[in-house]
Length: 443
Image (tube, rainbow, N blue to C red; front, side, top):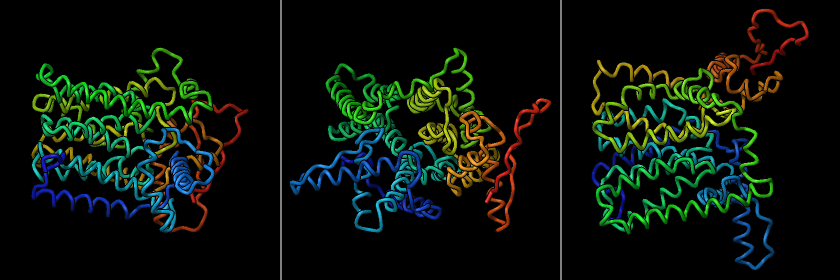
């Protein structure tokens, strides 16, 4: 059993039951489809073409024209089992809807296992369920897009930090491959290299002279995995002018804009990270305290935060129409670990803020999970206000109050039109040439 990254102890039963319970809970609101969810359709199409190409090769038939996805074939390989089963049972679209659920449940299971090494059982469960149902992770169990990268990022951190020195060569190779996958699931994964470099440093610190060969192999494997993925990205981006050219128009054009964007990413009332994962507000107090006892973990989490925020702050629009700041999805679990490292045991008097923020997070996350994220952009298009500025900054279109309004309409079970007029607040006189806003139907 020594070759396994997680030892099979009696507590493994609890962990397995937690994974099954989370999976079952997530499935309760599953839409059973991945249709119109970002680029997931694109990856399913690429996977279907891969399977057709395999079949054509085995049966010596003409090869189909390959359909590539924007993040390359590597993440699509994880889709192939689901797509293949879907071709036999119901449909690939239906079976693929289970993937994000399983990945999110797996992400939370890794979080729980890691928390159990630094927290009491009760605190570990509380923080795990807070992250699972009190943050944006709940919505992305149905949206998809982000769970693959977040899963491998946390797994890389767990393998590199949670169990101390890795003795087995097989486990060391597994660690390297997982780190490579963490950087390769998305084109933007290269921005995380300081955090991955820290994992390598933490694994070999104090032993560079005796283990330099192992460190070199780990670095080479990570580089090989990322390099292979990077070469494959050009299959999609090359024909349309390259990834940089496609992204260039989104970069900021004013020197102070990155600072403003960084603040908006964290605290904007429309798309702020804290709004969509309120419990992480506690990291302001938790990080300094946790640094004294779990330095490697805190540095890993902070590097992920700084790298992600730093990259996104260079863009004019740091968020999109999807629920919350989706590019910060990968930060939820590492920052939750910092809270557990700071306060490993539950104390009612001290942790009242934790319970309050968790309750707020569950209410907000439920709205994101209950409604398809495309509802808001659809309403904005009906109203003629579907601009990126409105999506990311206009309080009239704040997705949380809007989803609460829609839930109220659904709860009443109406059937009658419920008009809504998204009107701005003019300062202070409305220009006479501006046309009146359209009223739209919430239903």
